[in-house]
Length: 274
Image: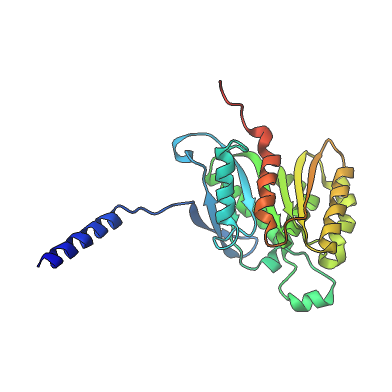
């Protein structure tokens, strides 16, 4: 009887402890119907601390590869940390969950082996239209945002971010382009980059570019792109290029973005009141 009583007390204390548990909430998940893509897309959204209690407006970071099982969780944590230590201002993170990243992040290619290996590729124009005509208006309508938009992309996402920068630079004020896959379509985007920058860049943008120890093609292409950016009108484009030889294709995003967000946002942090 004594053992039964002790067991009941233990069970009761365990149940009481469980009753006190609450979910740890990092953000919200929403669905948006895209007319441009003809499909529903999932958004994972991180809101800065205090968002629901104030009337302030916030910069927005649009994160490619923003699924919960991709980069959304650790990038949101990084933004929260950098905000806490005042390396950047509070910001909203919009993680765009993938449906078919090879389709969405690539423009059409003339390389036959890539057509066969990745038969759905070539849809970046529609995805960029989704960013401009569906996503940005949706976020502006439903959240308190300011005209400071950052696009973050790595690998094929970096290729897409570079394509947006070169063809439609005014869609974002800031770009974090990490390990871009410029090898796509025999480096045609790199070939076109100088002329595109000359013709499309009309207002100031800031670019953070980095690459790791990811093979000679990736490294050489990133270095070449950095030179192209730095040769463009310095009044319209601010560029920081950071090679990271200690990182590889799998490890570079988090550590690179730590420095990238600081680079892009540090001037926006208000001074501490004495």
